[in-house]
Image 1 (cartoon, rainbow, N blue to C red):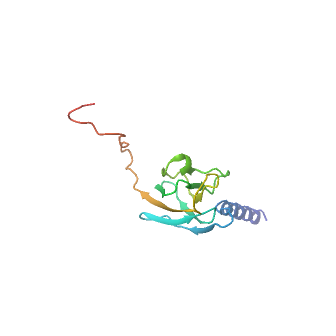
Image 2: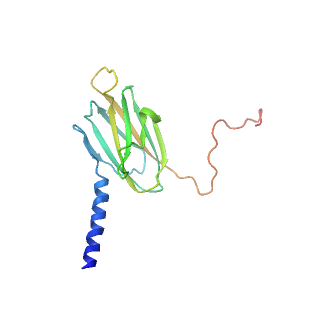
Image 3: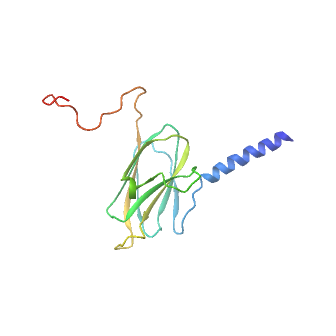
Length: 159
């Protein structure tokens, strides 16, 4: 009987992990499930007052990825959430963190990309087009030095 209970408990843990990976959608949002791309993937869409596509992207520990957001509107933004995280805080947001997110994934999880049109800003029009680039990055070889920041030394002006 204890073996049956152990199996039931394990299934419950698997089910709760699956529920943690399911996003809560806002009214008007449509979910598109993505797979991690082998090459650069571009997502294009239109966001207006919460009526837009949202995307889930499963990522695995050790993957290197760069996410870039672009739009012509100063009122459109992108937030990225970790669906396995216990809180509702974004792990990245273009409104505060810039337009590019480069990271090495620490653990297997699923991210939610939520493009949105700011409702708190004075705005013109009903929404904005956007583009999201998902770019897998090549990992640096183990023990390789990190790339130097800034300009390379000049033979005319040694460091």
